Length: 275
Image (cartoon, rainbow, N blue to C red; front, side):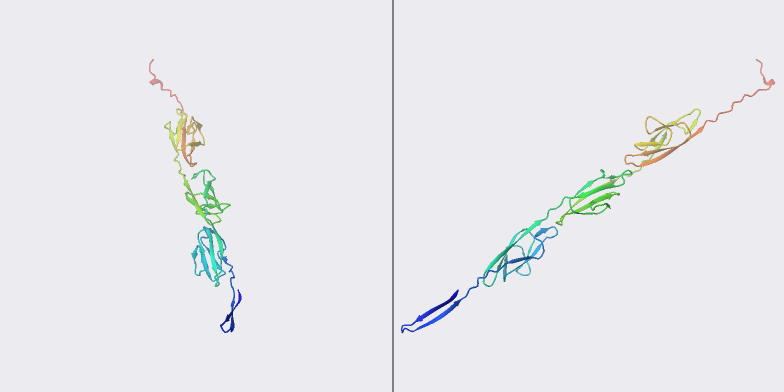
């Protein structure tokens, strides 16, 4: 860089001079990458990150997907990406951007707080709570105090979608069954009659149809289903099965203990027979 002069001399001793000015432009550009997406992390929600480089007149990227202009780039995989920026003087500069990724899928879980998946006449609702994320979306049931809580009062398969801050999701299901089958209570009369008399002073019966029996009267027998009745009346047994459902059956006990009136008739004298 500078002014350089040459002097020319001919054989006759005459001279002339000429100069040349040498300038220099080795200014290095400053490469810049602007992140248009606002995050350097790929997630289940953010599947691509868009950037644009600046600082030169030509741009050479070492990865990513080309955009509309040479300076544009889209990244859909984690890594370190560099752009080489060149200006008309041929000088270059490079800039890099680091793209990270978090696509960790949560593990959805459902805890059954009731301890059974079966609705019965005793268990009319089942409470459950989901875990594994920060937001929860159920496809059925009744909402509880928190988004993860659910109450089920009808049979079916219920699913929760669990989402974490990275937008990734997982689902888990719970199957609710139901047994509200009502038993059929029956009373078998072992004595063969429903009427108490002076001869039949007690009537023995046995109930069936369940696992538990509750009588409203009579005298208990060896087993809960056994009963003895020694007074007239209408007696009811409540039969209950393991699912808590129940049925009732009645038996009517009548009584005839009417005492006869004994009489002795005196015969006329002419009808007396000789001894």
